[in-house]
Structures are given as C-alpha cells and as structure tokens.
Length: 270
Image (cartoon, rainbow, N blue to C red; front, side, top):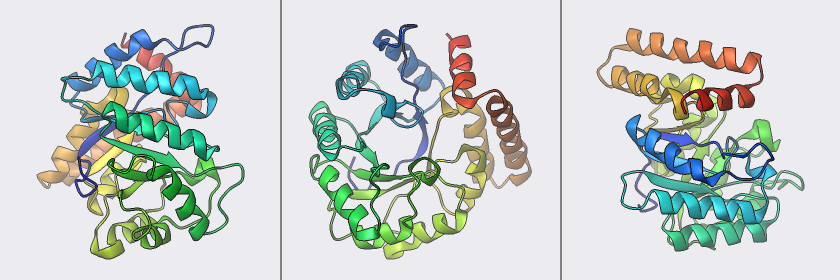
C-alpha cells in the first residue's frame, strides 16, 4: 500500500482482548481477525482508542502488534497499527516495529498531556514518528474529544505535506463535517481522509469519503456495508434508515457505558 492508495471500505478499530486479571489474552486475536473477514471488513486498526492503547505498556503494545501480524499472514485482512504515544520515542519504536512486520500503514494521535500548541509543533511531532517507518503510509489521527487538541487538521495537512514524505492523510474522528470537507480539499484532494465517526458515515460519504474507521464495525459491519451500498446505488432513503439504526444502537450502548457494552456484545459473538 502506497501513501497515495486510499483506504476503502470498512476499517474496524479493534478491541484489545484481556484476561480477567487485566493481562493480554492474545489467543482471541485469531477469532477477531476471522470474524472481520467473514463480515466483509477490509482492515483492522489495532491499538487505538477502542484498543485502549493509553492503558497498555509499550511491551504489551508490541506483543499485540506481533500477534495481529502473525494471525493475518496469508489472509486478505490488512492491519493498520496505531503507534501514537505521549512519549515520542515509544511511538517511533512502535512505528519501526510495524514496518518491520509488514503492516499496511501506521497512524498516530498527537501527544495529549504536553500538547503541541500550534500547527508547526504538531507537524514536527508527527514527522518524528512517521520517519521511523518511512516506507509505510502515515495517517495523523484526529480525535479532539480525546486529545483536547485545538489545531485544525486541514491546516496540519497543508503544512505537513512538504515535511512528512509518507503522509497519506488523516483518520478523521470528529463530527465537524465542515473541517472534514476542508481536509478533503487540501492540495486539490491529494490526501486520503477515512472517516471515523460511525454515526455520521452517510454524511461523510456525501463529502467523498472512500473508507471509514470505526469501533462498531467489529460487530455491526453488515449494516454499514448496506449504508455504503445504498449510497452507491443512489437509494438514499435506505441509507438513511440503516444509518438511523446504527445511531439508535450506539445510543443504547452509550447509555450504559459504551466501552463495556461494546465488549459485552463482542463476548456474545464468541
């Protein structure tokens, strides 16, 4: 996958499996990968927000990456590794490992404790991470509700274009569709902007999204594939019905605590 090849279809932001004592349960990864393939998912996005990376040690994140890369060998499922961390050296180490093991791409959140205060600082921090895996497409991970960062991602793209040679685009996890549209227009649409807000996928498709990254794709991928198919054939009424279905079940999960409820759904699926 080159930096100019867009992510298409669904990218599942996977859960990290744990034993009851909090240790990694890596034996479950094979089942996760198998189910994603059955459900028609194109990529696994591992170690991100859904994957609880901020609660994992560096060693655990490396083990998780190694397990996923071993499990998907010879299959159609591709892996994107989230490598972001408050410690840029840790992020660079994870990026290098991902490249060595054959990941399809890497992605990184901004540091969120000592935050970059402007676009230039954000570009430099992401450049340090991306340069550790120069042959992999790099996606900046925009999720302001978690990082608290106020830098406009469209401005990041404009300034990072000449600084990060392997910059592929942005994993855009925000409901700000105006900013999403601005991102898709930077350098005449040069960047890939996979959309990461499950409840608003249909709107993003209208703005040109080709791929989407989401946590509910772990267990509800067929619904989202129906949304995409209905949009492609111009059946917008059907697409709206399916999208409303996702909004309602996400609302229901969130009412009892989204992460725990989503994990419970995963457990029900085996």
